Image 1 (cartoon, rainbow, N blue to C red):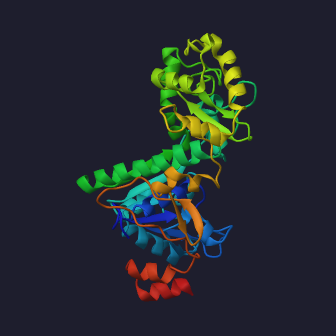
Image 2: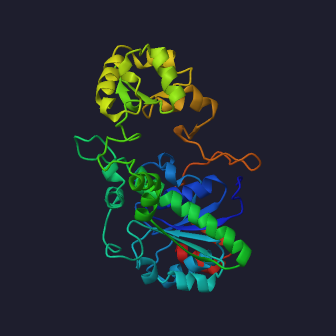
Image 3: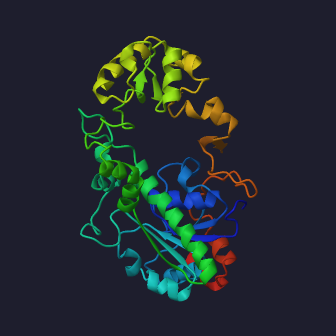
Length: 374
């Protein structure tokens, strides 16, 4: 493995969504990630090469209802620096793999826990999904148009932004501290906490009086005519973000918007009329024509690309933002490192193929390995 995390050993208790994504982030940067899963469990609902969030990792099949399997999991955890789990509160403790037991075996361990509601609180043991977690933080309320219910923003805000990335950040911070102090700790990442923190700027604006509680009525939520998306003549969309006066002025010049209506950029009373005129204007040309007119200047405009278009965009191609692994186009590892660049990941493997190799390489006795495999 290559990358800034080469040599780091991570054990992930196999799950879905943000847990695997967090582990993928670490594996992309060179960590050796081993996923512990139940034998015969349906890890993949697709061919492994298509399961991008499990790329670069290896699998160990352990039936944690068996004492030998629990002991083997503990042996792996003892040799790791990081453990990641995304179960409901209490599950790891019932398996005999809770923080107290694992940290007793490995005092330097960083024990990363991912939950939706958190390890405690009135909702801690209740089921939920991304849409529920971000609803509780105020983030979902602020997304969408004022005349319709808030739309689910995929699961980017709760699962991946507020969950997986905050867990990865917390794990790396705790790892840095553990390498200095020699002592591990538990990192408790709740998606409600992370999603709330992502909205820090919006709460600041609310306190200052610059952020309305009505969605679609603010600077960057689609309320401003100069920060919104518009449909073009060909039915495709354009994204405009000309907030700063100099970019707004350049946009007006290139579009020939000389009407005095557009002179007062920050006058909210004029936003509806401005938006109506801009919508009519953008419908007069195709998306490609608008990009040809505005895209080479500082107008803060970009085409709204779909999943098929984005990988072939010239900027993305120039930066190698997407890679093809086993004929599957997918986002490349990020961020970039000047001295310890990450290698191109390999596809996920068929679960179970790595069990013998991982258990032996991580130092488990051969008789135990053979008994587990049997």
